[in-house]
Length: 437
Image (cartoon, rainbow, N blue to C red; front, side, top):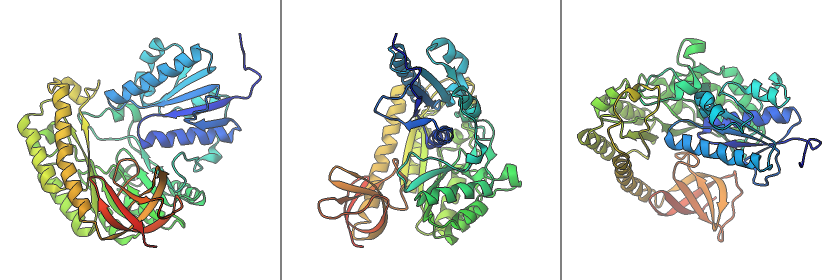
């Protein structure tokens, strides 16, 4: 039998799921490199002898993707393509016992908070001196900054607290150190992420301390944009808007998942807010931060959602004209509050409702984009793809929002640079223009 025991180990880390998982993978990579272990992220060269799959367990589709990926590498291992297979992340945290029984080819499973154990299995030490250091797998000009872990909310549909635990904030000082290290690496944009951004600081400072954190991060030299993701709307700390208005580095952009707009559905989802309160919050945001762009997500097909309740959501979307919208279809998750309810909206209707919301938003997005024709916008360029350089305004987050395209045959821009772009034309989710500076 062919053996590689004399060959130095090489690890390939595979990341599934959200940006919070990506940060976890980057921390794994940082620790392995600190132990002089050769490690790559999602390498296509297939020369690693050890694979770590960092899984997602959020909804059915994510769980299916995670299981299929594990099975794929389990087969590679059986064929002798790799020697060791380890699994970590949310799916592993939640279904470890079942996975151990069903996929015995995996050498070990680890939960979301078991990085030291994973490192030990790889004969690596957890190096505390590396805390604050981080390899990044995004383009070098932007990085995600995870300011807290876990969530204390009790939304009926959400399994995240089962996998990530209670809310734990990272100290401001530690986050500033990490931001400075990222800035030294060339990062210009920090994307602040958490399961619950507005809860930040309550555990450490006995108050909501996101404005103080933002003030501290704005002092970091080299950081030009700070973007806020995943802000829970109930009991929203209004002083966050004051910080956004005061600090030019903070993008006029807020990702605030509302999930629904019908009051009965909001109560059923245990969202602790009404439609009227949501409208008032958005109005305050627009008054305190002129020009702010709101991104939100909605959940359709939750148990008990009637056509009338869904129509109330449609009317809300049409009326509010959000700048960016995403839609999830309800997934019946074990051990959540909603799992005790009958999953009575069939899969076809869930998909139809999701499509109806996005059709409404498509028209809104087209109108918003057409209004930008003739304006000049500051754009950060992420990549070159085909015949275009592709970037984003401060109102757009990577991968999920609108993009600005500049023809590469006419002009050149370095990836990671800012440029002023005159908008010449628009599509539903893309703007086209030329660089004017």
